[in-house]
Image (cartoon, rainbow, N blue to C red; front, side):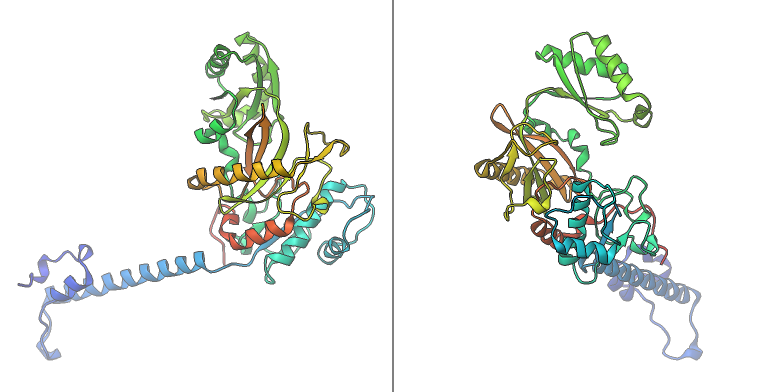
Length: 396
């Protein structure tokens, strides 16, 4: 039996129920409609219009998330180095085409090569529709680039379309699984005196007297701090002096500091994680760049003790690179629910055991002797992992 129209609650009914409960309208217009019939028809029309509008919006959002978007390749116009020895001509030609002249300018060689490699391989592998934006030179409205996948470093004073790295992997310390795989004693702390002393006291009870401290609230704002001792007052004072002005930004962060056991780490290696798996990697050797890659996904060049001033102590350790790859594969699966996106996973040996050093967002991470073809090919498939967070809706 149909309900009377005056008893209907349109917003809580399906379209089928609404139609079943529509009043029997008079077949002739001249017969007229009752007030309740008109109210029901109006409500019905408004409800269908609202539902159709919601469906259209959902369809558009779904389409936006599934349709591949053009990439933005962000390039910082760093100064060219004086020494151009061994730099591939394709790098030089890409720089000339998109940035400007290639001439000695006293720039940092490794920095320029890494920037050039991002430009060349980004243009080559991220799609013919990629947009090359040279900071300070390209005349383009940043708002037009909001919502597009980005490849390139995030600036200290970033444009609105790329104000942060898409990944939040730099907050790795709050992940208990990550800390477990670091294979050294660690404690998290706020910037406040009692919390800092409590963290030190706990580590001291576990036999730790040498500490390595990172400021996790704003990654890379402060250099890491190495201190030793067992006097809580002195340790806490050294931390406060080190933090100084930076601590102002962390007054509400209970995990602002990572206080860890200072250990001997060897054979540092950087894995580039895309789609929750390692796609390529290279040893953390400061003077090595992508042009030094040995034509392999996981470059075997490593230093037992990292030294960014020389390459004389470089060893070839393909078997260790494979161990790192296997470890990173397992770690990627373990962290797959964390939403880290594209990130870097730095590994090392601690007492012969593969261990995590740290995680960071991929965009600003050093490349070392990385296989850029493998990296950019993986990013193109996993473009959603390179969508920067949005501050506001694009004005288009």
